[in-house]
Length: 182
Ligand code: XMP
Image (cartoon, rainbow, N blue to C red; front, side):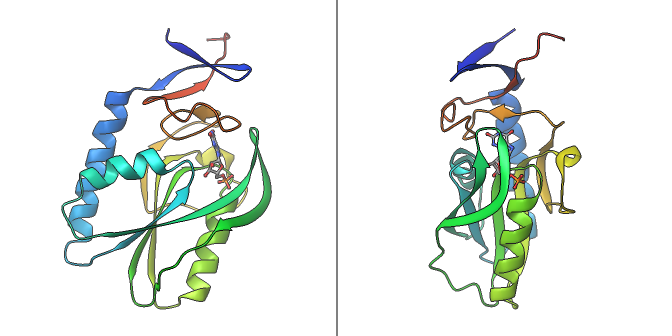
């Protein structure tokens, strides 16, 4: 079994680079169809989304714009529940097609608050949500993305942009916390 060490934890391979790139390409193709002629604005949630959004953009054939925000509600492996915006958005979203892009939806706290704030500030924006990973069984608030790469169980994952205490983002595959019970 392929394992990696990140900080004080061992992780085992969960989604290979090949699986991820095939799914990212398929998501881009769906967006190419759904957003043909609409020039959507993608808003990436940093830092975890950087690898996913870069790969996604390589497969877009539609006109699209890109912006980023930096939010934080996580420390170590736990969501604190409080949302802090560390880097804001310098775009006008009025009457725009907007796609908020995140790496993973866990409790749902981060995106439900962020998307509600965005919609309140820009009532005419048509906002959809895209996430590479979703953990439906970890939700604390009801929130679903419009586009989901992979639904995964409630396991902590790293790699492909996702971190454990800021480490492990560089791996091209996704790894889950090692469990020797399997
Ligand atoms: P919530 O709970 O607000 O969390 O939906 C969203 C943010 O929490 C981080 N997160 C993770 N990061 N492995 C990580 O590396 C995970 O398994 C994980 N679960 C949640 C992530 O930053 C996400 O945007």
